[in-house]
Structures are given as C-alpha cells and as structure tokens.
Length: 389
Ligand SMILES: [Zn+2]
Image (cartoon, rainbow, N blue to C red):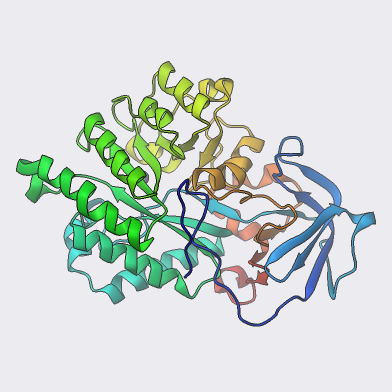
C-alpha cells in the first residue's frame, strides 16, 4: 500500500501499483455511458457512447462514432456503463456481531480480523463496490485502534479494490467512563498523532451524539486531527442534534453523516462549506429513525452521498447515482473519483440493462444486474464467483 500526505484528505491510499507494463487498451463501445462527470448535465449520460481503458486508467470517453481504436474491443450491446460504486461509510472491521463487538474484536487475532474484513470486501466488490471506506472503532484503546488500522492496511494491501481507512472516535469505552477527559486527551495527544505520522488513515471521524462525544470533545478531537494532517468527518445527529453539523461546516470537514436530526443552521453550514451529507438508509430502517431532511438539503445545494445501500430514500434516481459515485468520492476526499472521465481510475461497471432507473429499485438484488466489474482496468467478473451464478 502506498500513501501520500493528505492535508486536505484529497490524497488517498493509492491504487496498488502493478509492476507489469500493462498498457493494452480495451475499447467498450455501443454503450450508454453514465459518466457522472460534473462538467456534464445531471449524471452525464452519453447515449451511443464508448470508453477506452488503458492500463489502470480511463483514457478516453465520448461518442461511439469518434471512438479510438483499441487492442481489444467489447460491444456492450446498448447496455449501461457506470462508474464503480463507492461505499463511503462502513464499519467493516470487527469480530463477532457488530452491535456488541468490543469484546470479540479485542479478543480476535490479527489473522481473524483480516480474514473477516477480506470476506466483506469481496462481498462488496462482487456487488460493484470498487472503492470502500472502512472505519475502526471497535477496540477503543490506543494500541487496539492502531492494530485495527494496520489490519485494514494488510487486508487491502494485495487488492486492486480501493480501500480508504478512517480512524473513528466512536465512544468512550466502558472502563474509561469515569475518566473520560483523560481518554479524550489520550485520543488527541497519542492516538491521532501516531495515526497521522504513520499515515494509517486519511481522516478522523467523530461520533458526536447523545451517548457518544459531546460537541466540546468533538471540537478538541477535530483540532488534533487537523494538527496531524488528517481530514475531518462526523457521525452527526443520528439521535440528537448537538450542533455537530455546524461544527463540521465551520471546520470545512469532508462529510457529515446520518443527519436524521439537523437544524436549518446546520444545513446552511454544510452548504457554505461544501461538506457532503452522507445518508445511511440502512441504519434508518433498522433503528426506525426519521428520514433526514432530503428536500431541505437539496434546496440548500448540499451534495448528498449514500452509503451501504442503493435505496432511493426520497432522493431522485440521479441523486441516488451521484450519491454512490461522485458525491461519495467527495466525502472521502478522492478528487475526480466516482466519474468516468479522462485520467480517472478505470473502475467501471457494465450492467445487464440499459436504464439507470432500473438499478436503484432492485435493492439487494442489484448484483444480479451486473455483467462485469472493472477495477483499475482489470476485469473481475470471471474471478468472482457471485457474478458467475
Ligand atoms: Zn456509522
């Protein structure tokens, strides 16, 4: 794994560099290409389109009639091509059941944690998730959280799928509740500087809510993250609005996630800062929470991402697509990510349908509509058993 300094989160855990000089070109033509390119309208659909993949990147995108010649050609038969999906909010490293994972995660060996995570990454990739964020947060000790980040690095080291690690300041662990100030100091003065120095994560996410960290604690943790050169994200207003959206906006964080409870001032702060609102429909349904104010966020011009689910959730089909591509990339600080445009990583999906509206309505069954996944230019469908069935 190679990492680069990420003062604003825009540098990322880079694609694993392939040593062979693979520059063979594949041109996929006769396709409907959903580029999600911000320089085009809406989701940037090109009917009768084509793309050229060269090595690990997209070299060309445009109309079929203008397409370049490639070493290999693939006729898409009028089917849809989209960017690979980006899941920008997961808690995918743990042992045991996620809801009660502190004990089992602390007790698990590195090998068990890595194997569990690899299995989840494979499942996500089979469903078209070519970029996935993974948060820590189920150990809650300095050494333990560092261990989780090292396990994430090991699990992702040999993969072409892009894995973006986040340090989550999740909760005050039960054994530290009586000395919570000392615990927050330890996060700020030991854990976060160590993570920043070793480049083990690109951002710090703070759970600022009732039962988690207070607004004042979140401010202190974010300040430490800033000093360590890490980007800022927040679990915000899932149960109660403590003003965390305003804080993340003020600090120009990458994303504010959940937002079931958010004030008008919070929405205005996100809009002014260009912070992405990340919706988590799965969590809402499971916990029977109210739906975030999608209408108000839309009217304020806040970019919305959706994590871990393709349900449309009061959002339009176009918004849902941008929410799992371009806007999700922005929530992770991956500039240019989640689009099909010249020079971006060749992460694309060839779907077995021609209409973008078909896919969000399939809920969990969308995987069956995938014809092929290309990750960093490499076609994966042949090697992934879930796609073969
Ligand atoms: Zn979460």
